[in-house]
Image 1 (cartoon, helix red, strand yellow):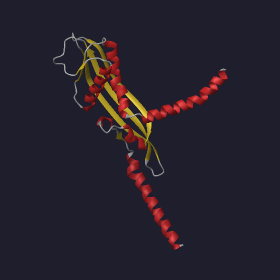
Image 2 (tube, one colour):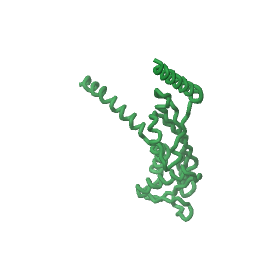
Image 3 (cartoon, one colour):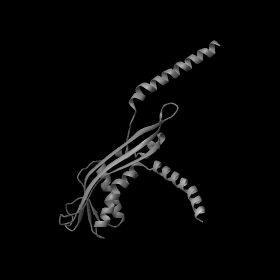
Image 4 (cartoon, one colour):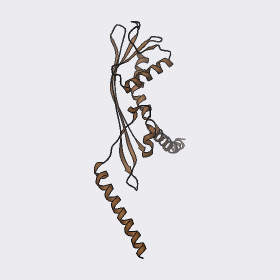
Length: 208
């Protein structure tokens, strides 16, 4: 029985691994950032806020990242029937506040493979994010705090780069790193040699 189970595992595990790799490669940058930035806040609120208690969501910075983050947190909390406010003024003193202190995102793609034409065919995707926030009660006491940097690395094909980025959020668009000496010296030299070879072959065939 044990031998049969092992045989099944040997057959199933590669399939699971392949599926997991494909899923990771097709996961959008926004989905990954959602797990890195939104999920920790929701988990903290779920563990610290009483059922039915109103919550204030506020971010110190008012850039695109924090606007998206506050909006995502607000929508998820409303789905759980938790009253949410984004403006501290006019809110009851019994409300608990979630203060987003700092956020940082860095996305870049590093080429790791080239095709026959010396074009980048595969990239290593790096997504790094920093999230810092705290939760304070109505009496201004800090009941929870969080500060963590998270990193994620996987591989993408060249034609997948545009698919994992969102057209609506600029912070999901990463930077593509290039190997300078290959791009400036090696690639032009290869193209030049190839061109000369084609021309030489063309005239050789005509002469023959």
